Length: 309
Image 1 (cartoon, helix red, strand yellow):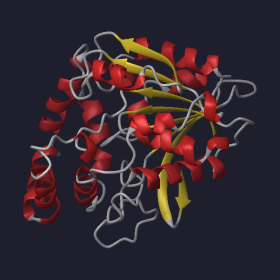
Image 2: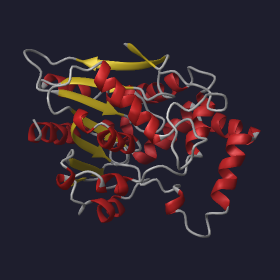
Image 3: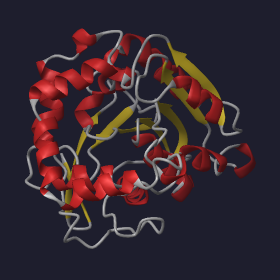
């Protein structure tokens, strides 16, 4: 299905509850390079438990439109990096509008479940639209190691130079063409699916590649976001939530073998913050645990939903 936001087409999938009245609305937000298909092993299980489930392609990803960031006026400016079209506040506004215009929200709002950098979007959504978010479950949120605040003094002169070269010279197109192939995508995914590399099958690779290659602007989206080294950090967003602010509580599930976002670093940064009700290691799993092993993750998500019903 498609919904129009600010004149742009946004693709989403809806999984209706199996029978009877809905237990509530669930919004699923994918990570960098992903799309709604990345929740294909989770959304049906949540719907079968009675929830009205929506998985949305963020603008620029999946089958949603991909405006050229070089020629498009930002839909929402991130003051920390105003020249970037694709940014966390913009996606949060997209999701807030989606909840308000498409979903039949119950009192208290939706349950929001996220992965990777989608967690930054979900948290910003809860900050900007507190009446539309009941609670959040974050799976392997991005530590955003390329963020300027996370760069070492040694890295700071070089990271912006590399990002500029990728974004503004033919080097970026060559890099994207190298990455956006079935063999490379499969190899990358197998690294981040350490417990079940066999889950990285042709269907998954096709789910990632096919929508991403559906627009000539896919390269520009990719390069625009990897040069986005600003915006909110998860620890800053979590500090704005929690009981003292009367805002959405947060559960975090984290693959203990995530090679990109180390769980122990996440525990150190986030586990003791007031907004975080639960920090749950997902033993042996990697960066996309919901797809790698849904038999482990779906019960965790259902427990989260029932705890905040």
